[in-house]
Figure (cartoon, chains in turn red, purple):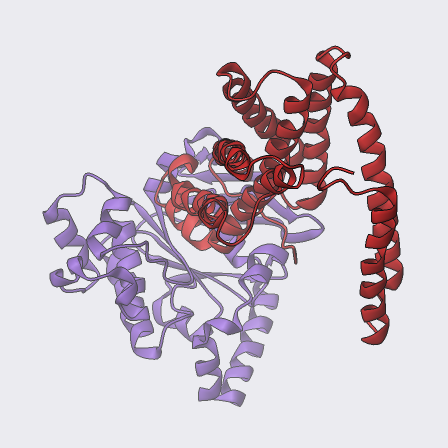
Length: 260
Length: 250
């Protein structure tokens, strides 16, 4: 067994920790036993299924088109996930699809076009996944922030509209503040990396026996690309949602109040 | 006519804010009060005038022209509005005036501050450091600097203490006396008596006829006499107003 290689037996033993979690739930009467079991079961089945599919896609004997197809499938799936997580955002699916496509195309062009990573299935799939995954989180965050901002600051925006400002101008301070707060999170993560947590790609490489400094180079490149992907996403979704919140005759639409 | 509302209906989803309203507001320097209880649709009626709302059906005309035919941005510079709560933008009073009119000269800024009885030295004060009454007068100055021909006041004193309320009422009167038509939304009968030249009473999204209006005014009157000063203080408390209900449920 190589270092970091978890065998079936090891996986089974790790379920002991799930048992600990279930024990805690029972002891503190949290009533979460069943959902923990379901979550554990789902995670296992989903990951194993993905693992088998990936094994086929990443196989160097298979055409690389499979890997691109996988990435192309991930984008609408991520957009769908965004629309489920932020249903209060108007036109969320279309906007998420647009912003995720934009950020994926741009970052993929940089990563693979400039040769940062080789154009191989084993790079396209995991790196694409990280791009889309992080971009997805930032899309949810930015979409929600914009809606919250214009809902909370309705007075301010309408005061600006009432002065005869077009919506593009009246929305500027609110949009700026929403974009800032949505991007700040990724900037903070980028700052804390290595000090507070070791990101996934690096952890995985180190576990697989790669030299830590090599692992860091890979991770750093990925972090910077994620930062770029997040910025593209936040701008596209933020501007798109803002447009949706105003009518052509420069009125702020009614925003349904949501608890989320 | 300054504004004509012709069989206007405004719906927000299920809620009917205005229910077949037909009314006229004459042009010229005077104060027209839109009077009604919270949720009667009076704010919605006002917001139709500068197109912050649009009718679900019916027509609103401004000086004879349907609002649909007018450029909303020009309309809003012609028909200025002051809101229920002061809305200072970040920065100084000068910054606020420059947001309203980026080309405003120092002279123009002095003029509007004098109009609202704020000292010229306030130009360099942070807008959000002013008192509520001063902020509201600052908001009025910011609207005036765009050179409006008509002024809409959406319960502008509801967040103010009695002294500031009196000051703002006097300003409204002065502007009307100088020739500017003012539409003033209030639920306060005494205020309507103090400042209004005429009133449109709204009850449940409809313009009240003589009989209904009298009934509403009598019940308001009885309420005031019964509660005395306590009621007055209640009216000055912004938390009492459910703006959402007023605009939304109408």
